[in-house]
Image 1 (spheres, rainbow, N blue to C red):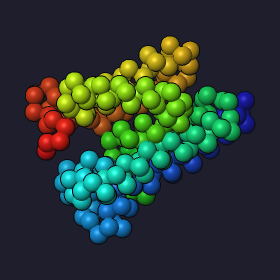
Image 2 (cartoon, one colour):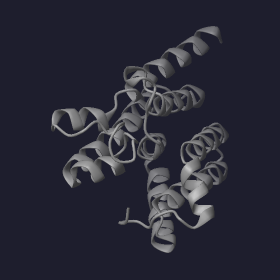
Image 3 (tube, helix red, strand yellow):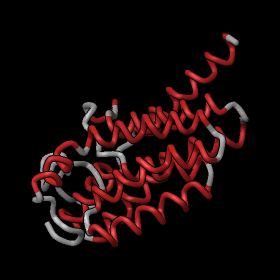
Amino acid sequence: MLAALMASLAASVLAYFVGSISAAILVCRALGLPDPRSDGSGNPGATNVLRIGGKKPAALTLVGDLAKGLIPVAIANALSQDTTLIALVGLGALLGHLYPIFFDFKGGKGVATAFGITFGLNPIAGVVAAVCWGASAFLFKRSSLAALITFSVLPVYWLWQQAPTYAVLSVLIAGLLYYTHRGNVQRLLDGTEPKIGKR
């Protein structure tokens, strides 16, 4: 039992370090763009990189943020059937993105990495999340609201799949995303959150 716990914690810490690799900051540095933490919205994520540098840097950032959630979880999923270990790896990767040790603990909002984690847990769950996001974005025209709806629905999906550990993980992910999007939530309540495609 102790050995399993130590292995889970070690895997989670490794995933945290992977998550701490900020795609937004590295892409902007490589392409000679301003630091996303001090330009645009100040958020080191794909949306702000799109604002600062355009579609190509934003796409690279998006892929990087997805990958650092997907790869650690997919590896853990392939090597172990311990759902607690796999869930801790996913949580570690997300916390690394939100609070990266390499970049003064100032990370992005976590949506792309959360999607990567979900695909790593189960590709079907990832497709469900993507469809939910797309439908919500189409209906409400707000990216932040679509993300919050999607990750609020996922715990129900996991319970339906009889995967309580992943349901708990999804609740934690949703809680963290609501926290990182608290400004967006306030703007949604105020009616001032911009629509998709508008600043």
